[in-house]
Amino acid sequence: MTSGATTLRPAAQDEAETLATVHWQAFSPGWSAPELAALLEGPGTFALLAQDAGPTGMILCRAVAGEAEILTLAVIPPARRCGVAKALSLAAAGLARQAGAEEMFLEVAVDNLAALHLYEGIGFRRAGLRRGYYDREDGVRVDAAVMRLDLNSVAL
Image 1 (cartoon, helix red, strand yellow):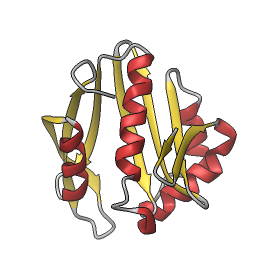
Image 2 (tube, helix red, strand yellow; image 1 turned 60 degrees about the horizontal axis):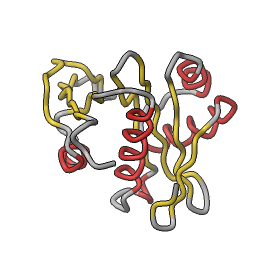
Image 3 (cartoon, helix red, strand yellow; image 1 turned 90 degrees about the vertical axis):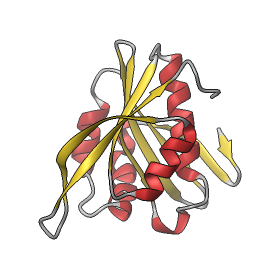
Image 4 (cartoon, one colour; image 1 turned 180 degrees about the vertical axis):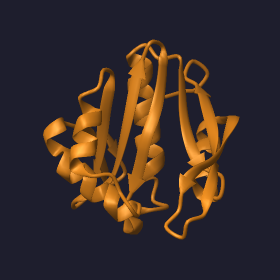
């Protein structure tokens, strides 16, 4: 899969260190390689890696029993606002649909306006709210919007 100069490809469990490196560049704290490797062992779990000259983004999803979930999506700061997150999200939604999922869910911080705009632009709609879901480094807890995408109503 290619998105402009960025190439998307499946990431294997033995690439957990690469996935963790991308995640740590995008989030503080990021998820560790052992955490990501353990998640990749789960049923229906898959990851995609975006690469340009090097890794620029990653997405980790699970598709089981007709439902899919984006567990995490990370794009390194220099690659943000270049379409990497959108390409990863659409590719993951397509793979989830191929795996038999009819809908996809995710949680996103309500103060992450760029991510909310991205997901709404793809077709995700707010389906609920998780109060105090995210812990921030400064001790503040932030709500998460639960979002849902009907995979049968989106062109992927």
